[in-house]
Amino acid sequence: MTDTISEILENTLFDLSDTLKIHLIELNENRSLFMNGPSRELIQRTFNISFYQGQKQAIEALDREIKTTTDENDLIANLKRYSQDVEKQLLNVIELHTTTYEPKENLRLAQSLDTYYHCKGQHDIISELLSQVNKYSI
Image (cartoon, rainbow, N blue to C red; front, side):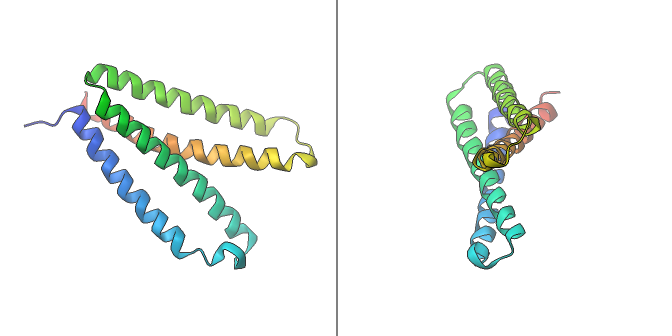
């Protein structure tokens, strides 16, 4: 008996969710760096938090999408649309980084980096699901 695309995607999301939980546990174990670590490691921790938040948001949104969409063709179309939206957000953030930078715009830069890593987390999740769709719909 072959699994449906929806079942394959649900299983993939379940695995991705477990992996995310492991990363969050590791991140929490290293929280002593919060105030004591080198600034480079503190910045990396911040990027990881944004990345994991993006992954969590994507997992939750895509799980709802899979559970509420009954037609597999509609589901695939919705996943592709979600992917395009995330890619568009990533491109907008990248464009923002290439504009002229004023030193007093540190907050904007920080917000842009947060958004970038958040979108990157979403992008990784949707890319994995689309990879599964392509693998099983051929």
